[in-house]
Length: 286
Image (cartoon, rainbow, N blue to C red; front, side):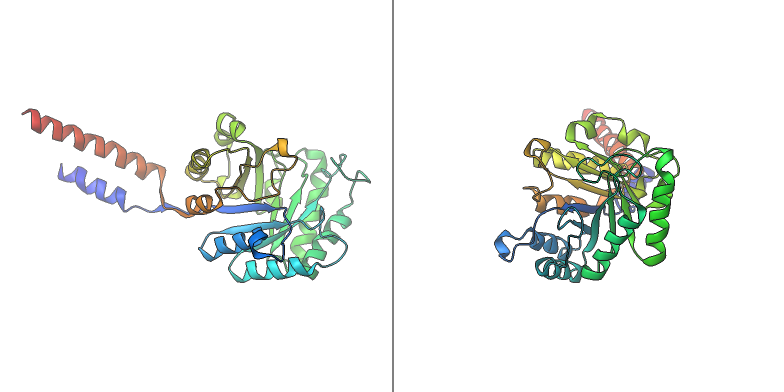
């Protein structure tokens, strides 16, 4: 029994899973009115010590010129410890874009948009949206990645294929958002069972209606060792689920930073507590 108690003590003080990064599609305008400026809530999260990255997207990209409202909010967020990524669409490399005209982009156009973010906002990296997954588009993204790393060695490159890409893509980004979908798809789908490099993988989960569902998604993500997550109650039915922060934003920040036992230690602790409970019952019976 003493050995068991010692093991339980070790399990209860064992290392905990590291906090997960929250990568927020911050597709909302930084209003000059504080009560309507959701960038202030992002800054608050960074001030709490959360690992938060905000994807800025002034106009489906950097826009035509620098925007003073974004400059103010981005600067405050970064000063609080937040990280800013510039949104750049890529038209799936060799395929048609979903919404842009013309329906293709060159590698130089992608890199030029990234450079505008650097010049105007001093961002910490880039978010490559509409990312392809097939081998035929790999040269396009290799060129983009090489160009960005050469120009900005310290940047974080985040790719967003929304599904698990083919072999070769993982090396092109620091984090690959290999899931973008609904609560039901995340909970019931194959994504979590097929992870190969969880720490460099992220997920964007929408249509998570309640704070209880948010905790369920967060717990699964952290137990799987995911490197990044974003959870929102926004839905596709609204047109764009990323135009506002979730109603449970403060709870999500807390859940992302709360201590979580490593799976092995948690299992040991649970099993040990069960043994202790059984031993106590036997003593009472005796």
